[in-house]
Structure formats: structure tokens, C-alpha cells
Image (tube, rainbow, N blue to C red; front, side, top):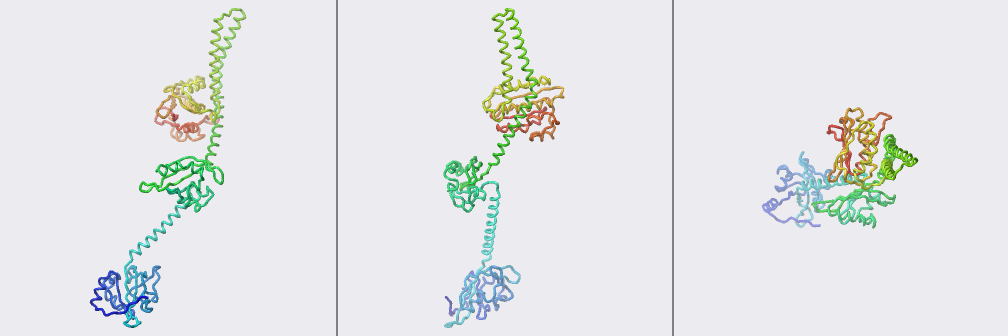
Length: 505
């Protein structure tokens, strides 16, 4: 234990020493009364010399508290310990306030001074420095630390509540954090995943498959891809997105968002199956509706065939048949049979299952020719003028049955809508762009009312009364267009009812 004995020193020298110190200094006698001070002490305590001299550390004029705001009891005050036990007390943190003033935080040191050649304590020197700002900063740092901890906890709660698998990896492919769902997907906890290399979590095969995406995301490019993942609970269909974690334009790592779309894929398959069934029902409905017209189309060439056969038989029986006549008859029969074959082929094409029909290259003009064969008699029956215009030589890769159904749905809707119009016409125009082809169906009817236009693309929506044909529906036709990265659009600004069935090339 180090202590100091009093040595002869002049008051002038003592005053100079005290006043040059940045720390506050008070000197107490053996009774604990303050007998000397410096200006720094008055400034820090906010007192005058009269308020300070002769008072003890426990004067009612001021109060002292510990860091936890509890009062400092006399027996543990640094000056008391130094004065009564003869030991030095260093760096004790205390808050001091005078009257009703705010606390001034002090770093206090008390040193006993013994009488010459004696163990009797003569005085106690108490030095203190104002650390109020330091305490405030410390408390602010503590508050910020608590706030950061709370935010981390909130972020983790948010991570765990997300319906996606979320992981955060550094540029060395070491896991920083992950949500509960991400860890459980691989049969682990977030704590077990943290600190592991991504290869260890994914396994060698899956890691090698994902390496190209990891390399690109670490180069600063966001990556999105589909992947089937084998997990402890079975094979899962997923869509993954890798997002760069960038600070000051430097990639520090990347975030992983993975969505389990297994159930969605299953629903999509069920939806496609339902659509295929709907398409089949619609085809049967339309085939029945077109049966009369198709029968008429077939009956005409059949009548020609029968007539030619009857005349030929009569000539043969009377031995009046010449070779030239026979060849002419065969030519007429051949033309009529080809006409029937084309009509039957169109029916076969149209009655094929849309979902199973092959996607192949189709020339627009060929597809429209088949549509015209199926529609011509019905259009004639209702005295509707039908016109096709535009670029019909384009070749598209598509499912012809689906696209024909969509276009015929628009044409059938037009036929129903213009039944009572004095002028009845339907126009199909094909407009070819650089990246898409638009089939514009316009009829002589007025614009569709706004309240109907807002709902007509919804599934199963119809304005037709019970018992009337509902048809394919605009919602399904729109879905078919979407499948070809296109769309079905109602042009509300056109003077007549106009739909644009757009397909990407």
C-alpha cells in the first residue's frame, strides 16, 4: 500500500500546483472538513468558496450517488475510507449534485496523507474529474447496444416468420445466419447451420449444381432459378433467389431466398387437368353447335359425288360411256372427296385434346383456313360478314387447338353480341411485330359496358342467361395467351367491340 507523508511546502507553491491541475482537488482535514480547493473543483461542483470550505463530503448542500443511482453511504465514501482506514481509493465513479441541479458524474480518487513520522492521518487529498459526457456516451452506447440486440431479435423473429427459406452467407460461403424454416429444411437448427460451409449443408452434388449461381452472385449479379431439392422429408420443388450483400460497392456475401413451390406445382397440375377437361367439354359443345353447318358442308360434295356416280352408271348401262367422260367424272369426284376430307380433317384437328396436342410450327394462314371451314356455314346462317386481313404468312410455334379455341371463343362471342344489329360483321386482323403477333377481333357491336368490362376476364364470368352457351370464357382465353408470354386485351378506346389476342414469337 502506498501512502504519503506530509512534507514542508509553502502555501504559494501549493496554490500554484493546485491551480495548474485540470482535475478538481479538495483537501480535507482529519475531521473530514474541506480546508483547501482549486478553481477546477469549484467549477466542476458549481459552488463558491464559501459553499465549499468547512463542509464535509456528506453536507446536506449536495448529494452523492452510485452508478445505479443509490445514495453513497458515509462508510463507503472514498474520502471516508482514505481518512479512517488509511488506504488509497482510486477511480470510484460517483454522481454529485448540488441542491436541485442535475448529476455531475465524477471519477474520484482519495489519498490519505500522514503526519510526519507517524501513522496518524493528517489530511486527505480528494481528486476528481468530470466524466459526465463519458457516462452519457457510455449509457448511450449501452442503449444502442440494447436496441441493436432488440433489433437483431426482431429481425430473427421476422426471419423465422417469413414463408421462405432465408439464409445469409459471407463471401467465403460460411453461414452468418438463417431462419428456422431454412435450417429445418435440412433437418437442423439455425445454431447448427451457423458457421458451416454451404457445401456441408447442400451436399456435394447440389453444391456443384449451384456453384455457377454462387459465382455470379459473388460477382454482384442477382440469380433466380428453379431446383428440386432432396430433403429429409422428401423431394421438394423450389425457386431460389441469390441476392448480393454489397457494402461500398464490394460484395461481402449473399442472401438466399428459397420458396417451396411443391404444393403450388401440384395445384398447377390440377389446374391444367381441370382446364383440359374444360377444353374438352367446350370442344364437344362447339362441335355439336357446328354440326348442322358441317353436315351441310359435307352434304354438298356428297350430292355431287352421288349425282356423278348415278349419271355414270346410266351411261355404262347404255354403253354410252367414253374414256374422256370417265376421266372428267373422276376429276369431279376427286375434288368433292378432297373437300370432304379437308372438312373432316378440320373436325379431327379441332376435336383433339388441347392439352395433349403437340406444340409445333403452324402457318397462320393454314390455321385460319381450318377455322373458316368450321365457321363458314354458321356465319352464313346468321348473315354475318366475316373478313380476315393482315399478315397471314407468319409461322408460329404453338398448340394449334388451344389458339383456335381462343380465337373461336372471341368470334362466337361476337356472333352472339351482334345478332340484333342491323349491320353484322366480324373482322379478324393479324398484325405482326418484331417480338409478337396480335390477332385483333373486332365486330360491329358497340363498346362493352364498363361494369361488364371490369369483370369479364374473371373465370366463369358470363352475361348469358341460363341455358345459353357459355363457351370457353375470356378468362381461359387470357390464360392461354399468357402461356405464350402474351395477353388478351380489351381495347376500350376502339369505336366497336375489339379484343387483341397477343402471342410472343
